[in-house]
Image 1 (spheres, rainbow, N blue to C red):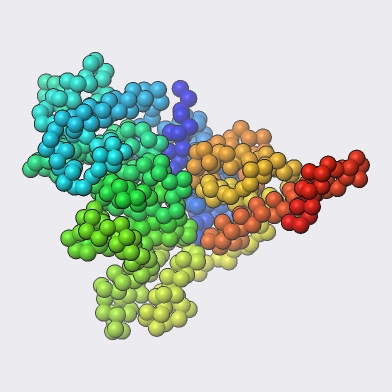
Image 2 (image 1 turned 60 degrees about the vertical axis):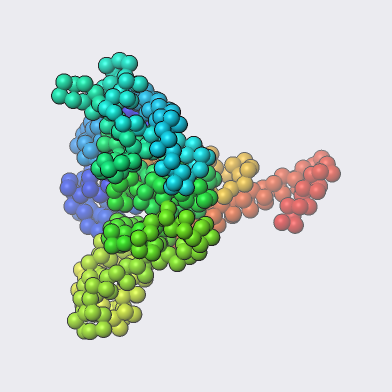
Length: 572
């Protein structure tokens, strides 16, 4: 059975190609996110095999072997595509569709059943005065209740099962997705009882789980659906679908902790808001958010638990800071959460509070400095080693350098002195290569644009290009158009994921060549480089159009409209 592309993409998003290759061959770190070693696919004495953690892609400059984690296992272990996927899926704790769980066609009835549960709970809310009164007391309008399709699970053990279970297969499916439990005699019972029900949707809008808030003394106060083939709480973000529906582009995303926090902020027009699902922020959460924005604000309750959660979020996010991520932390007054604080100070007051959000760097040094006496020599010494412990886990690059620079100012030592005291391992100087080898086939700015997009696919997600851009007659424009279409439709986060969509591309050798090139520009400059390359391509297109009009004018003359267009193009 052919695996759905969405499943393959999900497997690749959860796997680190370095973790797949490193146990099999010896790799040495050679840059902020690059590794090198002796190629396992041909005999060599000098390392030419390169692995990029950022691109999730390997390439040998000797024998030209290349690919992602799937391709490596197929080549190194001599596995079939199916066997390689099985191996990676097992490492990522993902059941294969054909392994007795759910095929792509079987998932639809499951999500349909959850949609039926949503309708059932909404009808129950309409009939329960206490539940409606609770939501009114929390300040929720009928409009926002409808938008998030909030419902109510009544008391009793068999209400939902009686309403939805028509066949043994439906019972099994509802048990599998966590809506029903089974007694010892296999009789189904409702998992959610006497609770306000919040449907949880994935970013495509499919119902995948529920969260329930108890009305009485039932514990826990909040209960989520258990993990299932549809629902992995460390991957999903509550409200992301609604945020995407409300905004063409997510310029900045605020991450809060609760369902009602998200709903309240959406109600007040702050729709770029999501929440984690009863769990700390995860690496997968960060990776998901980075598909849509480079600016995040983590908003935490103003208590000790909120401070601890903020620090955990910082530890998870720190390795991603080399990508240019702008990450800030907003701490509310003690005893307040986003919902309560918003209703106390109003939208304008909350927006003003957001301006006080603390950049990651400030929060990092404030928190870590509080753990030592920074005014003493012993305290400064401890601070150096504490900071270095965290920064060593981060890829080398501009952000890491700036963090060390901040440390040097705090302790009064220059960077060279700190480096010598910490005694880092000497790093072998890298031989730099030209950005792109000279070739007669591709116009230089087009080569640059392709190379950047192949290596940082998400930069192509919202690339600003004019309507007739792809009509410009340049070798390689068809490939650029195809790559951008794949990115905009599928949002592959890495080179490795993008290449899975280009397996049958006839220009694949060129794709591999461009994807493996070193781009000698700091990470934060890649977006500008890409937009600049596009601008030069547009300029070339304009020059092409001018030459066509001039040639036509000499040969047969121009219409009045064409003369006006030529004049406009010449004037710029």
